[in-house]
Image (tube, rainbow, N blue to C red; front, side, top):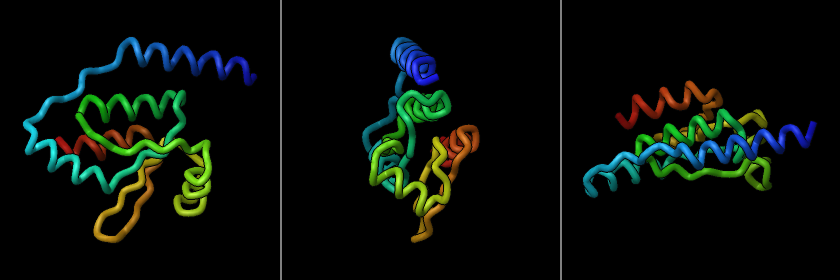
Length: 118
């Protein structure tokens, strides 16, 4: 099973590389405001997870510079489990007004990003 997952993961990464969406171009002052807002966000993800790829593609289409953290590696893995409550990806950590929220579903994450940064 490991070999099948590994092979499928490489196919997903190759197709993502070939068909990478174009990044949204904004005026530099507007992009700097967006970049400041995205400093409060972090995406916990696996590189070859199809749902994580879906979220990363949406982030690229919107021109968002959100930190991506590999949830397979410590300390990110332990942070995800200890603070988020689940070892599930993709997971968007949102820090607003001193409160941290954890959002787990890819469609929910994309919807949140569309509403906040559109």
